[in-house]
Image (cartoon, rainbow, N blue to C red; front, side, top):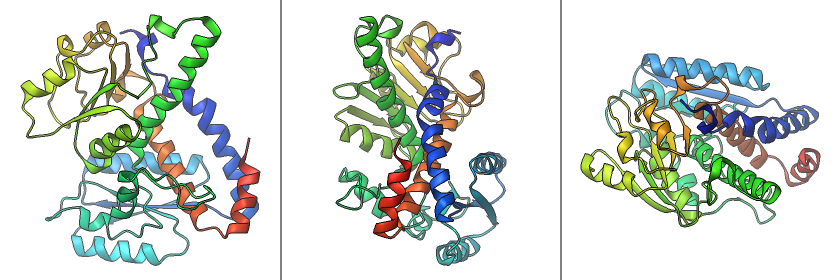
Length: 325
């Protein structure tokens, strides 16, 4: 396995997120605000429980108040959402999807107040994403919320594109022998193997907004068509649960591969012989350097955006003056 081919998520977190978040924490402290996140788990899924505990540890490390609720039926979940919407001390609400209850989960997504929807799955937030709106106000002080996993992938591309351009200017060539910047989005061919609102559909919209050429595969896309699309792609993003594997021979040489699946959707370590850069499945890189780590930071940035949107204009301007580098 080529460690130099693993996308360095931790580099972005250390260079950009931690300094910015520290400034925000200090500013909230001056305003007497303790950010608060509520996570709601439906049922008893072990994977959801593990994820919830990971979110709790992350929140504690970033001075965020955390509380959780476990709901065993849809009425309890609806009642919990209503109560959290009314709770003035809760700034953000996150529900762990999918729920085990009958019916579409969108009814729960739309029941969460847009002012507390830290996942950006309410139809109001998704509507802004479709329209490519980024701010709620003309002064551009109140940023809009978008789904954190998809947002994290976009963040990696936009940040790394700048770093690669800086390297080209400094060294006269892109890192790792690339002929062109592998992280620029405009005109690149993206294949996304997932159509969930939280990942595939949201990411497709984000990339379209940035002028990427996007194809989305789902359960009704034939495997043959999936492979054909992968074979012609500059970037492959896969988040298929359960057994699903893209053969390395269908990965174009030099492609960027993003593997979000817990089980892994690519052939390891063979994929490193073809792909130019890889964000591999979680257990092939150290903690702090995983896609999930980037997702947690984007989740927290969404919580900050929700808090900012609720501040009075005068206080919001003062807050932004404190958080500028």
